[in-house]
Image (cartoon, rainbow, N blue to C red; front, side, top):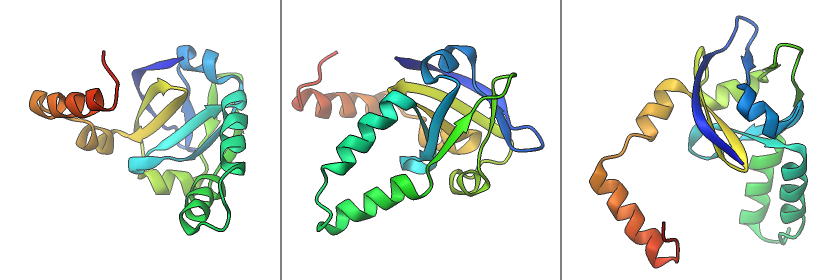
Length: 145
């Protein structure tokens, strides 16, 4: 399981170091793609295969299914870590996520998310009242912590 929050910087070539704790779960090669909320998702090879299978079952006659499939797969790129635990984030994905230099990498269960630091702070700062509301809604869906 992937978890934790890590702050890093891209190097001049657009490479990013994956923290050792996340590297262990993702492996030396994984897939990076567009994620929701303007971040990038990283999936280990086994989890990526699971995602592929889920998308294969979607009805291709459904317009929304085609849109989400294109969104997720068109920008997907297999990457490999170098001997220093770095990988090159493709330019198109850096542009999508607004990543320039400062990055936050977070582990979220089955994936790692890569965020531009400012965007991460802007989109992931919540008041206690907001979190209470979210917890109530999720409790109604059966998630109780």
